[in-house]
Image (cartoon, rainbow, N blue to C red; front, side):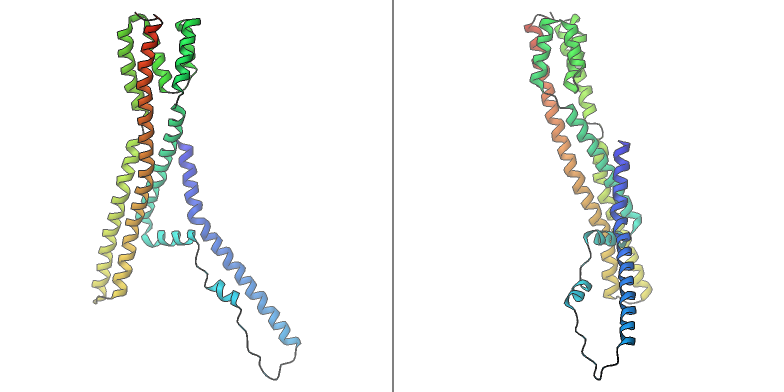
Length: 281
């Protein structure tokens, strides 16, 4: 979990600061090229005699296209992030990073928890037939996932009767379901918190815009439009974060529901297996 959070923080740092250094390198290289072209032109003018008539200078279309080139996506995101204000935009970005870290950790955990139920039941039945309960416990202990843990819990209470085994399986299934849902509450918190922070930044930005109008003594469209644009950027950022995390949240909920259904079906099949093999009375 901590490694995933650090990796995402590093990615966000590189995402917003890499375009800045890239722009500085481009500026430095352009300045060097201009200086070299100026020196070359001065040497050529000193070596050649002045022409009688000045020739018209032809503009290069490639230079015009380069000067009119639009900024990259990273530069646009960085500019909008700075315009929205680092106070609220930084907190919204932190919600996104933490939410993604928890979501990725949950996805990995749930994928590991997915078990081939039919194969596990077949292995347990063969172990009960050949080696008894102890051999079946070894099969469950060597298999990852909540279903294997439920089977192992039922096998430990097998000497107390089938009713006790059923109650133990139901109780332990609730415990495993709680473990599967761990972390979802934090993702839900970030989904709600990011838009609220965005709305708060918008309200504060609107107040600052009206303060600027009051200080100017006149309602200038430029002042009003600029203040509203900056204020709304925080709302856009919060909504984008909420949409991204909501997608991950819904995927995790559907994944957990599928695992829980497998647990219930496997528990019923496991009890039937015990009764069929006369293991528990």
